[in-house]
Image (cartoon, rainbow, N blue to C red; front, side, top):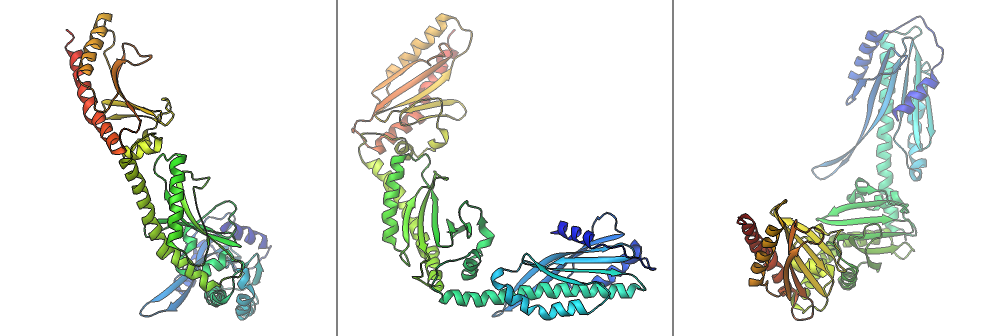
Length: 488
């Protein structure tokens, strides 16, 4: 806005001449005395070419709403610009925007102020214009026969008039909002604009959480309510109230379908106010998220007051209930996996069963029909897991010294096989040790294979996983390192 004020003042500049000239120091003193007569007027010097002095002033309007023991205070700060050219000063300020829906009411309330502004001084070339939803005040005062007192009085008048302008718009806007809310509460809604949504739901302060979402024409908002993520998307003709959470890390399509089905049942069982269309989905642009969406169509079947009740019920009642049910669903699915015998092991099922944050270690190099993972523990134990669905392989690999002779490499491998053959990890159908493919005489790998054939449940598999990762592989790893150390 400041840029437009500067451009405007330059356009307004005319070749005025006069006998009096006020230099930088003189005008600064006058300006300071003028500011001292007005409460709450932040100001400061600014740089503006071809001026003697240039200032930006914060025109602050305030509107108080009394309450029981407290009062609600609304303020608005609009920047004004004052430029001293030595032989004249120029002044400009824009009001805050006036919503089109309240334009007639507010402009009528401002009419007396407009007349006073234009008529108080006939030598300041005062201008009051309304354009693009804002009022612009300008003045241009030549110092012909003027003294410091004349300049100060006009500056005080301009800044006070600007304050009254900002305050009047602020107060009338709030009065208009109050009246509009009463209208909306009784109105059978067929369309809800962004402004009307915020008027109906003042306590939500939605605009503090505004976000840009393509295609959402009347306001999109995302915020956290009681620790739960919620979105509001207003399309004008209908509105979506959305519960949002994360899917389990790495959830595959089968697990997503299971969650959507169960969460849909939970959402419908929980109930809703106003009979919205209820949908559970994973949004296309956020595939790792899950939504439960209430879609209300503004078809005249309910009033603004009833919609307010629907909105409050969604946030106060449905949101915490569905969040609790979603946690229960995830726990139920994991419990079922742990209790039921496994005939096929999906990627998501394995990650849920192990509960070991494996989704953060998915490998792009390893290939498994139902996932592959690679990770390191304690900066020394290296693991790979390859899952085909019907079979899963746990691998621990370790490096051997370089530049050994062939006999030494053979000894390491043979003695390591003896260690592995002495003891198999529980549940494995095959355990073997050999050189890592493509890295002969560089890396050894200990592999344990487990069949998924319905012989055991998820809890048993989780035990096999922990036993291999935490005990068996580490013990064999350390023994192989001893073999290498004792080669000679």
